[in-house]
Image (cartoon, rainbow, N blue to C red):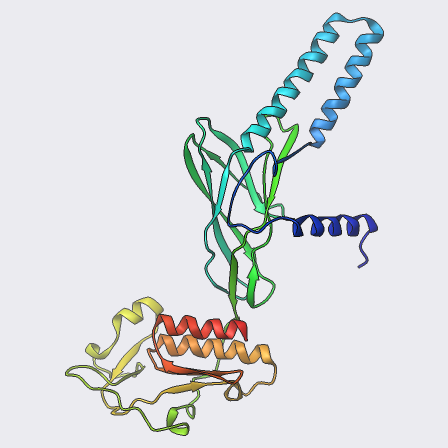
Length: 320
């Protein structure tokens, strides 16, 4: 669908304007970066005042003059109050956590008020959206606002431009600013919903000698899915309570193989589908407590386990 020429012109002007704004994770609003314009209600009020003034002049109505200038004075006071309601606020962005494709990246903005008067009806939103989040900030205090944004695809993405505004007290003037955060959010591939089982032939027996697991008294060699008849003491109840899946200790296995995961093992041709299946396998291997490695784009990530290794593998999949 073709865009209207005026809309295209506005979009290009917005892009040019935002490109000139500095990147920062903390910004203090001053008269240099706070803007003010009348709202639609403010414009209607201006037209109404003009009509009242013309009628008062035409009919020489003293009460008409009084009402006209009284309303005009209230509008001017409201303009200054609205501008001071936003000026002087400090905004600080919290680091966003990585998310999977399709999920909303949530990040919090801390609003700091160093003055001795309350800030009313401050609204924040991702630019070009109408999902405003409103809050008040007490004197010499702070408040947190949580915003959400959905990245278009996997990878490392800069956060979008944020809008901050207030219509307090009368709604006749809109005071706003735009803020470009410097932080970035990492978006992992979307895990395949129903992936096949972990590949059986992806052990390190194909790439080197088998690693013998060190055995300690009372320590199992590996884990496996629950089978009917397993002793209750061999079931990992903590993992079952956390994931809802029954996993048992396996005392039979005397050897522990390192699991290797790479694109050819997925059996898929589309690169994004391959990454989606690899992501699901990495999560599955971590859930079972296995040692696994990842071969991706000619780089080998040595087999390991734990949260740090999981984040390293997910990051490699996101940036592949």
